[in-house]
Amino acid sequence: GAVVSQHPSRVICKSGTSVKIECRSLDFQATTMFWYRQFPKQSLMLMATSNEGSKATYEQGVEKDKFLINHASLTLSTLTVTSAHPEDSSFYICSARGESGRMVYGYTFGSGTRLTVV
Amino acid sequence: DQQVKQNSPSLSVQEGRISILNCDYTNSMFDYFLWYKKYPAEGPTFLISISSIKDKNEDGRFTVFLNKSAKHLSLHIVPSQPGDSAVYFCAASNQAGTALIFGKGTTLSVSS
Image 1 (cartoon, rainbow over the protein chains, first blue to last red):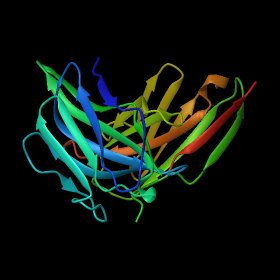
Image 2 (cartoon, rainbow over the protein chains, first blue to last red):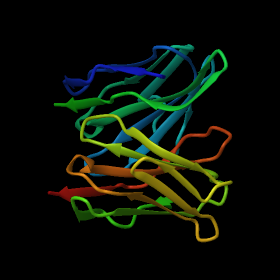
Image 3 (cartoon, each protein chain N blue to C red):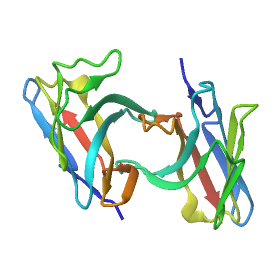
């Protein structure tokens, strides 16, 4: 089955630094990647949608200059939280849609990244 | 405005009984619905889905019912097991492959 590998699973960084989160599709080509954020006991909130080779589309209220998304290849998408602040502490999850041969893969989720900004 | 609503934040059920989790949606463009199980600090685990051309889909202990006129779906788990204890999210999209929109989740506790 389809697998999305997300790293790191947990990261602690100092306020003002940048953090990169990677999501790799291991056995299919991820033509579309969705990035979500989940605050404690809240829903998964869509941050942005990226298609391979195109600029990401951000949801209202999400700062594109703060949350940089790169989807330069069909197997890798990255989310960089720039100049992180404590309020950016959250659980970030990616979800990929794509295909491999004749198989179409729907929404395959990564395992998530717990970001803590101190 | 929430497009997918799970109005019950929690549900407690005894082992062996039926668990019924409910979900309502407002966007009539949604035509594909999914249920996920999630533990803290982990990604969601897919359970079952249903397309709007159906009103029921069954997979083992899990059955999803869709009432399009009421814009309502429900997940039935029977029999419930302690290992089912988790947060359950309802999600929706359209078949065009847009992003999933999630409800706020329902925490299910199954006691033995």
